[in-house]
Image (cartoon, rainbow, N blue to C red; front, side, top):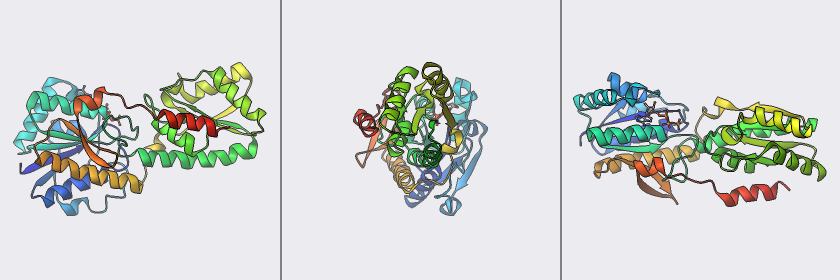
Length: 322
Ligand code: ATP
């Protein structure tokens, strides 16, 4: 293997640049040429490739987003699109690829491996932390800290005005962000897709909190924790109990920003481990970190198995909301 490609795909996540930089520098250190594939799978189909040397990734470690850009590609979902992408890789002399993205990106990579036998390894780049085979994904820690900063600010207002706030954080299918910021932000209620709560139950907890002398309450709602999100939950809580709450949907601010030290270190380590894995002959595997050790998980397993939230942490959150 002399020449490898690297690309980012799906939703951007803080730390993707640190991962790209690690692939470029660890690859160069091992005598490889590294090619950046722009705009994810779409760039692979369009042949949007750029040579990347160690200096080309200077000053990117601390930047959010992805310097290689990212995209969602419908064309890649077709066998014809994938054949075109594979041919472009071969024509560019690329004999190994690092894919940085979420579960959709892994699914695409798996198809490319199976149909065209191109060695691909993946690094988990998604703020949602919903990938099996790694304790944490690249971008999760930053997203949690960004959301937490917002919650701290909202709590100042909630406490001053003695109000109830419903704060929606990202997480359509997984409540990792909500659970983490809920505990760190001292939420009275955390609403997760893994354990849906009714408006009635939510109202009961808020009322009980008020009964215990709390003058304000924070309800952290994962996008997928309640049908219609925080807006709908606030509306239904009002309908069933009369409790009036303010709603803040944090949305895309959770995606951007400079990655935390934790995300930079994770991304650096996983990016370099991807190069090592390719050179060792690995393909069709996701590289993760489990208990501080590098772990290789087949793409199939990484996308099919579900990583559950830490139920003990969830119980702790309830206990501490006393
Ligand atoms: P995030 O979790 O941040 O949304 P993701 O990697 O899951 O990131 P997706 O939009 O699901 O993001 O996937 C990225 C791209 O991967 C898609 O636009 C598509 O081109 C490709 N892809 C996803 N699923 C498949 C599939 N089953 N077969 C082929 N390609 C796929």
